[in-house]
Length: 330
Figure (cartoon, helix red, strand yellow):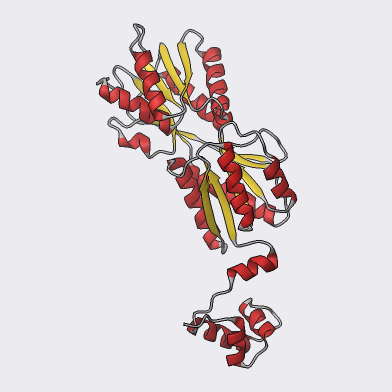
């Protein structure tokens, strides 16, 4: 079957190629009658614009790049869903790549985005990512970058994130309300800025408002590591009476150990986490958590992206507010 081209449409309608092109773009200097004829024929012949030709002409595509540490992460899954919805409404598609939390892969992904002339990039930094030169060069070439969730410290970039410090403080407040005496707090990968922010906020709050509560602070880069840490800490003579999980991944590891050891929640152990909401509701009793919405973060990130593309560079760090969702585990 012959591909329908602008030239073929022009020949059949006995119009110039430029007239057909402007009619398809709804140009104001083309009459309504001509536009109607062009669109009718284009639809009947299943005409589609040559995306590659458009990329060559405009030096960009109608595609946004998205980099996440792991596509399987439910928080990032909901972030991507929000960005995809807004992109589709505005005539864009997504190219989604994961870094596996490795800076080298992250840089390779950026190269793929440049080769495909993406219109902009949504980027969540991998653990220990230090070289931001490639991102800086992209912004200099007018390819906007919006960092989300795990963001750089530099203020020269557009950043959106959850209110990370507030997440940790809310969790600490609920732990104090429980009258906890011995707390095990397991945070995410120590190399991530988000882990450092939440840990500092949690520790400062506990030391200020509950100095007599004994707290043990640990980091886990996987659910398996979180499980191992919990088993070791719970095996001590002075067992924790409350455990805090900074991420869903950490919570999964903790709960695997809790179930295997047949620990009763909340009578023997209080459990609280920070989550998008899906994982805590899988357990019985349901786990109390501070809600962080990847979906809302995605909506905010897209607003920032479009503002950048329209020339209004937004070199600010915006945050999405969080809230406590009570379960039956505290």
